[in-house]
Image 1: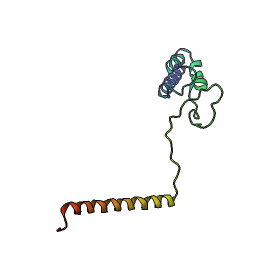
Image 2: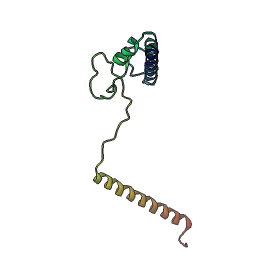
Image 3: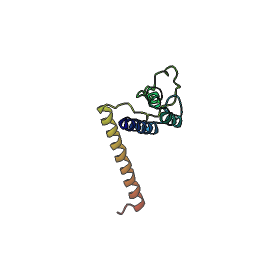
Image 4: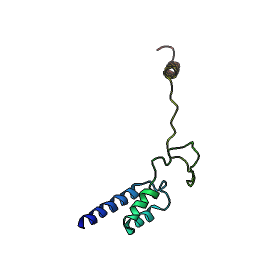
Amino acid sequence: MPYLVLIYAVIIVAVAVDIVVADGRTVRGLPKMVWVLGAMVLPLLGPIAWFALGRPSKDDGDDEGAPPREGRLSRPSTKPAVAPARSAADDARAEEEFRRTVRERAEAQRRAARDQRGPDV
């Protein structure tokens, strides 16, 4: 019998930690505090309800372009926008363009410095 109490205590602590660590925007059904209280007050039924009904699923928020599933409100994505991959040719062209503009700017600065000092230098 003492083992059952220990197992139940471990389950309650694990569920409480899981609820607290979960992102509040993706928790389903109820606010996080209600889930914590429910998991602690309802023996075995609370933790089962959390894992079955309240815990955010792995695909919550991952399907940006997909329409919202039934019963789920659509919300803006928190994922950062990813730039499309560039080809090596684009990189080489961009690199050459960058180097050309740096050379032109350096030459313009040298000319400006020469003009300020005068022709005798």
